[in-house]
Image (cartoon, rainbow, N blue to C red; front, side):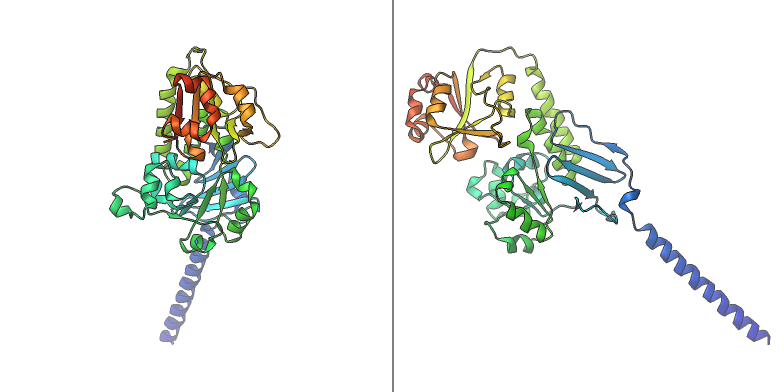
Length: 353
């Protein structure tokens, strides 16, 4: 009888322990879930110049908002994806180490914060890059061979979605040109690849465009490096704050293959840079013509009328190819031989690296 009682007590203890263990597992499982509605805002990233994006903090999560492009919830590595996320919020899970970079203007900022190893795919061919490290990376040089944090970058041909999938792409950074081919964005999203359209070109201040580097730093796990880079650039520009006008007039342009001249609008960051340096942008009166683009295409006749007497010509080599000499410039557009700046030798080709 005593043995029977001991056996019964033992069975009861085992059952109690089992129930306790089950309860612990259920509690642990419950603790591993987070509901989006339970997240509360704990702060916001300070932006001194940029107006086209914002970053709000929700504990360890970050909500990124891009003007006219939606919201993105950044999930740090090791944190769970919240449940019941609104349909208009795109989830970005770190590490974003297989990024498809289409916006070429982003590459130099990525290079400067030492995050090129996270760029796996490019929308630009090797010979189209003005960033040396990008050309090196696309020359099929491995990270070990190159000796820096640069991964081999593959060039993606239009519509080659199989390559993007095979490489495990986890983020596509596009510029606003994607809106001319919305089916590409739709296809990427259909394949489960989040697409972020950066709008730095819509900023009206050069430091505002530079401040987009903070966003790339957050995305690629280089926030501290990005903030240091931005602070350094602010310090470099500070001496120009009290720059007096020099009286020099300046034209910034490029020439398209069909003989149109691309110039920046007067509200663009390039016009602001010229002003900060003491110059006067000759097309400062060109404003929005309804397409929301930062540039306007002019006929050669209209460009001649506005810029023939400019003191300085700045040719934008990053758009239609580099120009190495006055002869090449005039060969590209013979009419330029009549411009005051060409005759006086005050013409320059501008790169962005």
